[in-house]
Image 1 (tube, rainbow, N blue to C red):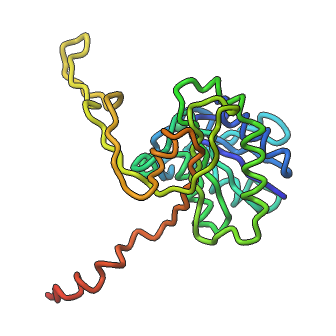
Image 2: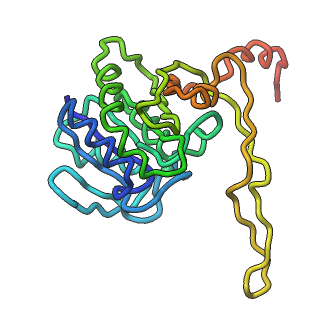
Length: 249
Ligand code: MN
């Protein structure tokens, strides 16, 4: 099995090292990852400057671009053969609910899905990324079950979150749906040392809601959360209703 591994925290992050190690128990791994932190870049593509690729070792290349750039370059130019799977992560921090709309980790898996390659995004829902090194074996076991399935769904990526517990205390795996998350107090408005106003997005408190096994609840319950995501944003239920508006010119 040929596996492309990427992330949005940069190639030096703890999480991508753990993911690559876990993936090597399943097949041949090629890492193509951003050369620096690219978290919250979502599905952005670099169009306005040239991308440079640096070869770090035999199976690791780094790109001065986004996670989506990495997947596009890897599949289009860098890899000798088309991979059987694309794995993205393990992100330092959760990608639950609305997070998936901002996440570069999830976007890399989305890009693979768009290009017709099955993909899994993985994130660690704890604060201390050093703890991710404990997860190599569990992640390898989980990936083996996912990647060896004959019926891995087309046009769908799996969004996996690991709970902030020691792997020994893990309660199991739950298939969940995306919850909803709102940030409260995550906008800072202040003055810089020169007295000019600035704004800073980040921090604050999370508020969660959602019914029917939402992903955040699985994490709270000490379970690995697995959510199948597809990329069809059409609101099919509303097609008929909006059609009845009889929009015209
Ligand atoms: Mn990240």
